Image (cartoon, rainbow over all chains, first blue to last red; front, top):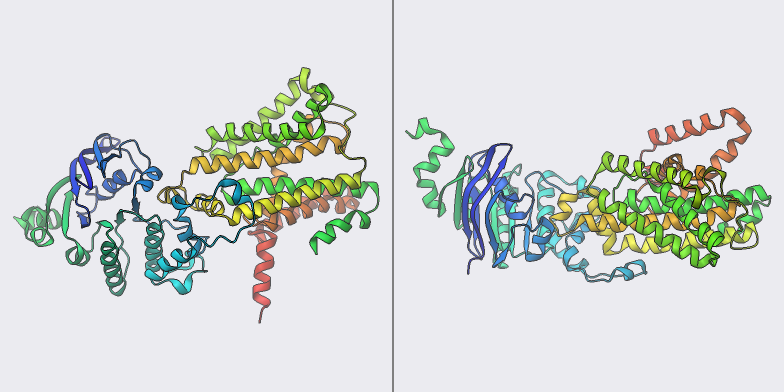
Length: 250
Length: 296
């Protein structure tokens, strides 16, 4: 049984083919990296997988469920969570409120009860645990907008984890982070993976990709050009060409 | 403390005129609460609230006057009618955002106003409906009734915004795509807030005709929508107490300015502009930052 399988996905924007005939299989339990130069179509592919966009054609299966036609919020219930390349937090809300909002699909309080006084602390402990996991416990009651860039990235990760995903997709989580923050992120990703969450990471940071990923999928100009282990990818002439340009590789 | 003040209010303001203003104030509190749920907590720029206020007023009055319904039954029907019309509008409008929703809801308010004027066989048009009795015998009792209902609505909404539903609504207000990435079906929750807001505005409308004694469409023009919005913004959008303060201030301010005669509306307008310029978060946020600064 395949965990996530995409077959011949296509997506164009006004005649520009952002993703062309992309097929990929993500095995369960892996840390899977999606790399490629700017404009390779990585983010578009992630948006197709998470349901922000629907593909023009192709098929998409997750745990044997057909994802085509399901919108982003419906896919979350199947166990697919994501973060964004351009951070999208609830900036006016506190860190704790941000993470609590992430438990939305697990809430089972009937609507009428929400009009009554309650001291429901359900998910609060778990939310604080997630904040501590990303090192932000002390900021729990600050507004998300007051965090540094790196902290905002970590909060977005904690919030997405609150949905209790089976597949966690991160769009360039290391962008804008300093070396120490990248190192912290790397450890968190490994830890997330140990909780039997499959991780799919779109990334530019080669350190991160080479150190944590078990499989690497390389795209350029909307098409897949190579897939293999980090070591194989580093040695592949087509990948080097895509990154450094044809003239140098030749 | 504030409850005591509300209870004492009709005995501090003893003239019939000022007691009338008190009733109006309680109604405005309800309207501001209803709009705040939609605009302040869910982030939907809704300019159609005057229409739901009008639907509540007309549905209840017509059921009582033309069909002989009991007041409370008619009130219930009017609340449901406003709520369902709100849901129906939301089914289309929640796909729209920001200015587009503002224009669509404004259009709805204009259409409703025109229907009230032109559907003469039912609404009596501009001639109006006369001799409407309030559900209670005098102004003080009406004030206590409406203020009591406003307090109950306040408490229910206060619980709601603290509940998981409140987290969800605020998440939608802050970033819809982000909320969707957490499994939130924004369209449904926006429609829920919109419909509930419409029902509460309809509830306020139920008490208006009996208070005035007559019912004409002019009470539900689009200017009313803007007044409600001003109450929410001046008080403090997205807080529970802010719109209550905004409603009280903007109900009494024009009355207190009556001494200025022709200049009254100019001063009122200037005051609104100054508040928005210097207290963009409304009175509540200004108060909190003052308290924050003066704390040792």
